Length: 173
Image: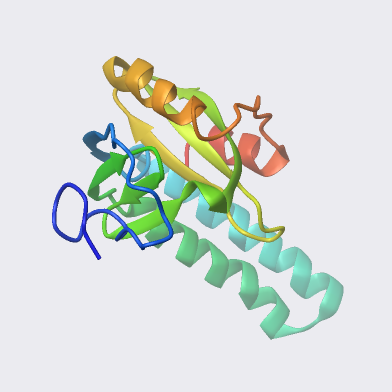
């Protein structure tokens, strides 16, 4: 088996796959857009969790049920304080490499472009019913090359934010 481009970066070719002229696009970007959170953001999170816990306790009279919102708020605060890693992305005509994980385009139904401030993201819609969407970020100057490469492999589909996505965006998580 032959490896294309960099050793170990692309998915190895098998004998059944034809060798294609790989036009590859490589870039480095954050794994997600980080929003700095103020002390007020954390205070609001804690106050909301305490209020929800108190309501749960008054309704159920169960300490465990009342503790769940507090634990969730703690986890949300820890995850919200996390800074994104810089990942290396490489896309070719067969799939995309995100860090050390390879995704073949056969895993996805379509892709969408979503502007997020100064950046644009690509949202890959999975074929599997309960699979998570895959989102990647890139610099605006790379958009034309990346979308040209993607449109040859996946159909473009307009993406509408659902209620959870709108909520996460509104709280700047």
